[in-house]
Length: 366
Image 1 (cartoon, rainbow, N blue to C red):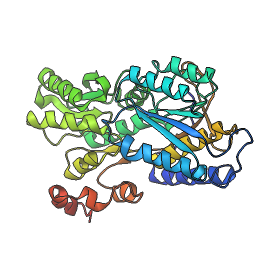
Image 2 (tube, rainbow, N blue to C red):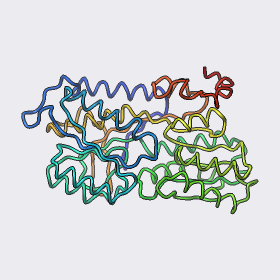
Image 3 (cartoon, one colour):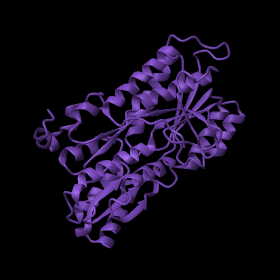
Image 4 (cartoon, rainbow, N blue to C red):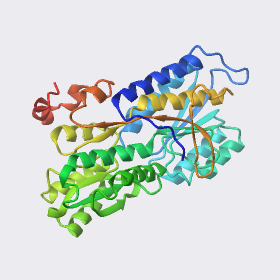
């Protein structure tokens, strides 16, 4: 996959947010004229993969809905479905939306390969498809996500930093995401590029359906196989799994070892404050959602994506897909104020509940 290089820094997030704004000014926004073929009264089908991860219902869905309304002078309609981690159900949902003649689809696939035939059906019906967050197979028209190998590298770099001179003094456990998610493969690839040769990987898992309970079971198995005294750190591909991993570590009496994460979920941020989780990857959902909404509206209205999609990405089935790739930031206790609080994702009150107040006070989060 070919992708643009992005700086992994808070400053890069600001650039990304500004870039979304400039794209709007150059071709998007509620004031842009509609094509004769399709006006503002379009119907956008939005299909999200699951509701186990907090981000989809809390951030992605409302952000996309808001942006579509903004771009269509309040006339655009969103038809929403959540697949609840069921690829077959998601295919049925696509079929239903095709039958109901939506004008465009935004699809975050449960299984990138399993969705391929449904994407082809949409294409045959003249309905363009925006692949959201995960690179769906089939003839997609556009794609937006984060630079996923950079996510893995960011996690790997953070884990190495936390381990310091002890990096080869024991074993780490790698808890990757679901094998059906192409993003998980990219996170894993990026992490291995950083970690290989610098740490000893004792056990490694692809975690079924990204479920925290599966990560918990895998971690229990790793502790039994490696011995609790030999584990010095855990690469966890996201925050939900980190929660299950940390529960297993606590039950075994293991503490003070770095555990990575991703998504900056509230529970993950609170564990970072408490010192139970070392880091997460903060992925600003606003620019990702804005890009998906703008590309969807432009496609529905028969417009070019040139002002929005500055990158090209190859999927296993489609080459040179117009894409928007958003940069990410390593989130630790040192930059909570400058990331999730500054961007309005959470307030101090959200994070520093009574259970975490003392820990918040200790790191100056007030």
